[in-house]
Picture 1 (cartoon, rainbow, N blue to C red):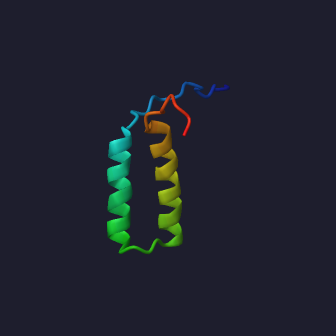
Picture 2 (picture 1 turned 90 degrees about the vertical axis):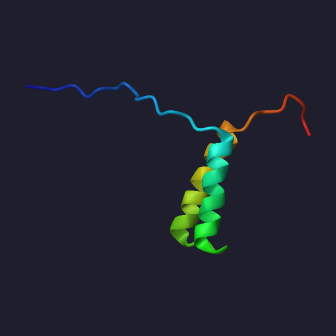
Picture 3 (picture 1 turned 120 degrees about the horizontal axis):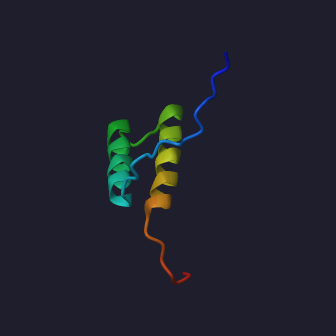
Length: 61
């Protein structure tokens, strides 16, 4: 008997840029200003999430 795998993507609640920014600040505070390899990966993920959540300006800088 074959079972099919669900291809439905679960909706993940999106966080606001402010919420992600708070987590970035907390990461830096916890690290004491120096990020480990694991923390750098977390920071990278958070910055990408923040950039996706940040309001986009209609004017180019």
